[in-house]
Each structure stands twice: as structure tokens, then as C-alpha cells.
Length: 147
Image (cartoon, rainbow, N blue to C red; front, side):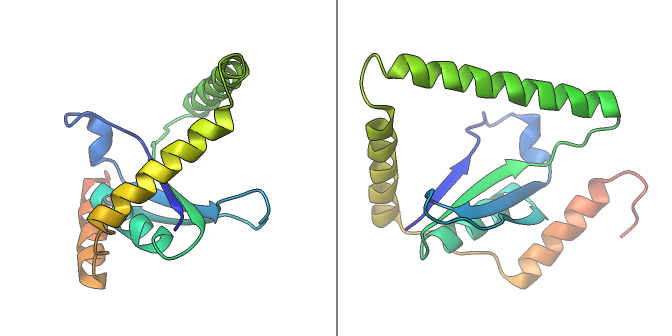
């Protein structure tokens, strides 16, 4: 079984209505291959597809929203925010070494998630028709695109 990673968002988050993508990649450092990016999908479809794939294979699926950027400055701002977040995470990892092994914590979280999945089971992936209907809804929300 692999791992599914996504954002934990409040029910009223405007990000829930955005198109979502799934990035599939190796679960561990032993495998090296180019990640595969699929989408855009509606969030529920992306989550169900990601769960279905990682339920049977040792892969990581990252389900995240597509953030439409309308300018180079907006893109640069997103890049700067990601870089700051990575620096903050590195600092947290460094401080975690003072209190225990960070890798043990990750392993425990993965084991807990796997146990939940065994009890609940993976979501049923959407059918091709459901995905196509989702694509149409996404396209309808884009300005200047007619379906």
C-alpha cells in the first residue's frame, strides 16, 4: 500500500472548488523515476483516483489544487511562499531531532493511515462518464471557455 497526501481544508475553503491534480511518484528514495501528473479533476474524483492507485501499489499520490496565476509576479509570489514553507519545514525537522527521531513519527503516521484504510477500504474510483462530467464542470467555470 502506498500513501496519499493532500491538504486538510475547512469545509468552506474556496480552494475546494478549484480543479485538482494528482502527482504520482515513488514512495521511497530507492526508486527514481519521473513523477506522473494527472488532471485536472474535481477534488472528490482526484482523491478517489489517488486512493485507488496507491491502495494496490507502493506509490505516493499528492492531490493538490491547481492555483490559477494571472501574472509572472503572482507566480513568483507562489514560488517564494513555497521556498519559505520549505525552510520552515527544514527548521522544524532540525528542532524535531532534539525531541526524537522525525522518521519514527512519519512511520507511525503512515502505519496509522494504513490501518484506517484497511478498516474503511479505498474509495471506489469514478467512472469515465463521471470524470468527463467533472471535466465539463471544470471547463464551465473557466472564463472564456465554452463547452
